[in-house]
Figure 1 (cartoon, rainbow, N blue to C red):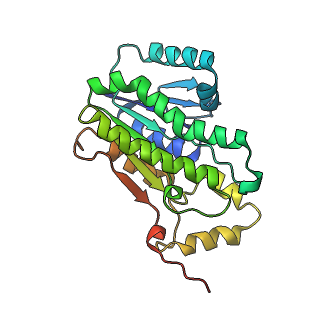
Figure 2: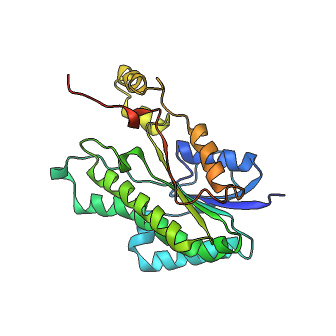
Amino acid sequence: MPTKSVFITGAGGGIGRALCSAFSADGWKVIATDQFEPDELRCDAFVHMNLHRLCDDDGYRRRSLESLLSLVGNAPMHALVNNAAAQIIAPIEQLSVDDWRKTMNVNVLAPFLLGRTFLPLLALERGAIVNMASIHARLTKPGFAAYASSKAALVGLTRSMAVELGGRVRVNALCPAAIDTEMLRQGFADSQPGLQELSDYHPSKSIGDPAEVAKIVLCLADPDFRFLHGAVIGLDGGIAARLHDPD
């Protein structure tokens, strides 16, 4: 029987699936959520949840969180992984208020709401919150104004929660760069050479694998790492260390 429990958002994506598989393989009870239930997801329980609506609709938020706590019941909760993300790529002139609101809701407000909801249960176990930030919290490029701003805010939330929660709950963030997911590959569907160029541009000469992400998140959630707290960890193939000079 699993001895530790984790709640994972954004379970249907490439990283989310890897997270569910890794935690399950490590003996955790996995409760997963996404807007739609994906096929063949490795988890013990699945909850349908629209995180954008969770933030904007008071009634939906109340019902969803009450249902979630009812599902968990009196069982111990050891980790929350805020993995879900909204990424809307558009020039600043074309970025709508709704685009901005959805991005901030899913990427910042939802992690705050879920962290606050699970705080009493996590504190009982001296558990952990892991926030999936991004390299865009530090380094970005045109078209990512909403996404980069939201991930920078998530890093700020991570540090604030770590300081305020002290020894009750550990809070850390992971900042991946390019990870080999279906979403990334769809962006290069018309340009396989472009995907290879992206890989070659990283000093590691590769892009990340979802399984690598999951292994680090497992460490961040591991109760043995008591001193790992308030950290913002990069997983970027060395690209954040690279100085790019104009040709």
